[in-house]
Image (tube, rainbow, N blue to C red; front, side, top):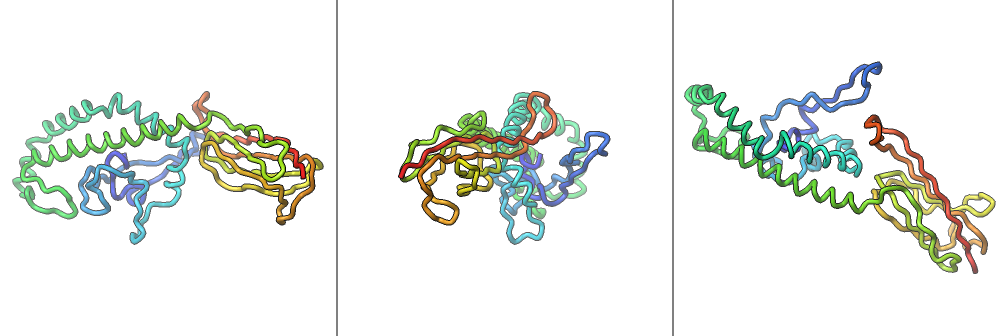
Length: 280
């Protein structure tokens, strides 16, 4: 809802979290949702009128109520985006289709028609600026048309953006793996390519044949995709190591969704090793 409406207060004001007791579901849930009077292109600040752009990515450095960092952390997770894309497709083919949305607007307009007439008779604000509205309609129908067009344009922008996420996800590997090291044996440098199916914490270490740690090539967060590193035969102190057999260990840790059971996030720990021979 925060994104469909592009609510300028979204994620930071009038945004809540709750959870059931541990004996129930126990997970943290976003909601309940409320306070969308500044959504639907109704705000003339923070680009609230623009049907493009993700609200979760809004940069508000001078606002005392910026979007908490962890919303962006969640949004940057490829597996989460994939879930959003799948849910969005489902809704767009049903409750949020253009036809369904237009039908709902028509129904609500008909239902509150007489009340709207009484409202503007009591408070004649049509054609006048009321903070912080962006659009000023001369008639009630103007306002309805603006709302209708804004929502459809917004959803169609989201269609295109989430379709690009689906395309990106098609290029993401389906499972963790480390490709054969090349060249092997090597003299100057060896290339290490590995596939990561989701954003993960990656550790890439080199050990000698006796299990002694030689060097850490990488230790940090990595986005899903195919990545490559190289090892130039140096230890962690920058010294040239002797000829021999070495072990490259790739470790990946992350929470992933159990699609088969459709429950919870489970801890996944992936490890793979490859041998490489250094010849001086």
